[in-house]
Length: 233
Image 1 (cartoon, rainbow, N blue to C red):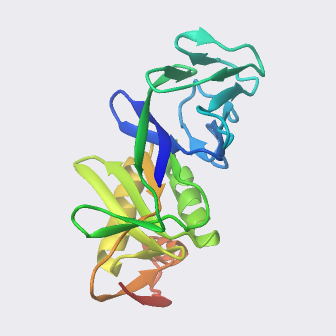
Image 2: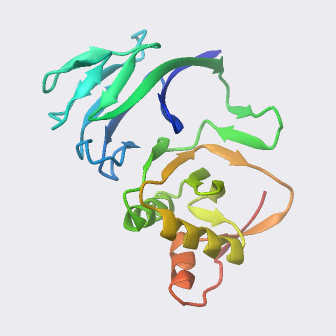
């Protein structure tokens, strides 16, 4: 079965978000949005993307944004709606994205070509993308993953390269030393850093301890805690 989706590409940072038929996602600067765009020109609750199952393309609805929602350079009126499709541009405030179509083979799980990762199509919750405004925003995301017991991979575009951490039921699957170092780097460079959490999960063959974000944050602040979970992956 073919699965359609639309991807929103940023000119310098690659894929920022993806939407599929049947999905509705709010976008804005606030951390509670499904798609977080941490830019001062973007309103806290800027717009909504809606893709009814029966429609060939999704639509964007402006949510009374201060600096506007633009489709192909044309600003929508407050609460205005416009269809978006491949080849269009979507601009939120001053942040512009290119819209591209993507199709693939659907199924219960999608394996990458290297067979080193698996995409969990049944994983509950939406893909989370955005850019951290500061360290507090990064902490809120980590605690959100823990509270919602999410499973997948968290990628953060830190200086010197991308850092990717596997998340299992809200726990970070990483050893103590690397976990604390990851948080230190994130704390130092959080402001303006792009991130993406998706249902793609890396798999291996060894048992690894799982650290709750709260535990690693405690160690970062000088505590001495021990992991509460272990997984064989």
